Length: 184
Image 1 (cartoon, one colour):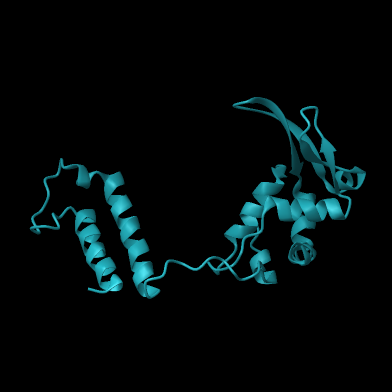
Image 2 (cartoon, helix red, strand yellow):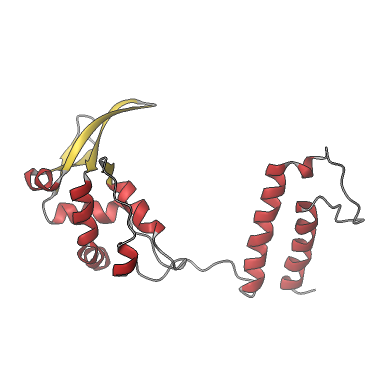
């Protein structure tokens, strides 16, 4: 039996379990059996789909993202701007949600923040604990980047956020951010 055949055989067992069927004798499992728990069943369906992808790819799991990040103007037009200030990490998350190619690299908070530092919209500051953080410069504040105090599990902290104007600035300059990211 080849590896692909073994994977397909294992997938058939997972499929049966996901559907509440005993894979050994093909009998229907009692309703109160653990494999009929909705969360367990969903896990089986998830694993089955992963195995299907491996089979479809000739026995290889999904390739790592290797296409550089890019968004067309049409895709960028679908960006969901927030009227409330949001973190740069949220901007990155929203941009990544617009990506349609699963093999494309993602853009990160770090990519955007480093570019903003390079054009002096943000600056790196040292906090009292010795760690560095990024804060808006005067130029950054002019385009709508500010800080907010928030409270989390570990107490109060300060976060850098972008108003709608700053969000638009970042999306409008996405090509420059991508060029900067790819030059590193």
